[in-house]
Every structure is written in structure tokens, then in C-alpha cells.
Image 1 (cartoon, rainbow, N blue to C red):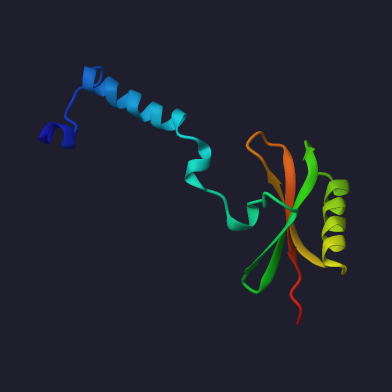
Image 2: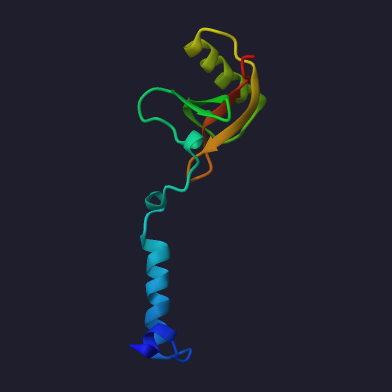
Length: 118
């Protein structure tokens, strides 16, 4: 048991190969979604296109695009802001906008920080 805890096996031994296989299996077989390593404001809702999260007094809206895009352009940003304005029924003064991409790198939405009301 002491040899296993301190790992005193030589490189190239059978035990070393088993450990390497276990590490590789963990890396490649565990689905990426199992780790939930995404900030809260970057999670898109399953139904609907809007989700609000408050942090540090700012309101963060998550807008899901109607379909995936490959490029983050001014046109898609304005389209997302227009969708948000339509859903809220008021103009939006944003302080920050951040693209949200899926695991393949396609643009699927935006996180939009709305300016605080004083």
C-alpha cells in the first residue's frame, strides 16, 4: 500500500502504464459538461431567450440568438441589443457586451451588461 501511495514505480513499468491509461481515460471519457465550469451569466436558458442575473449592482441579460453564427460582428451585436430592447420594452444602455460560444466556437448568444439606474 505504501508503494501505491508514494508512487515509487519506475517509468515504463506496468503500474506506470496503468496510471497513464487511467489519467487519459479520465480526460477523454468524462463529458465536458460534467464540470459545469461556466460563469453563471454565460449559461443560456433552454426555453426563451432572456435570463437576468444581478452582480455588483449591474444587471446582466443573456440573449440567445435565433441561430448560430460564426463571426462576432457589429451587426450581430446590434441584433442582440435589438432583441433585448424588444423583450424589455425599453432602450438599453449597455456598459459591456460579451459573446457566448458553444463548444465548437460558434456564436450562440450574448451577455449584455445594462447600465445601473442611479
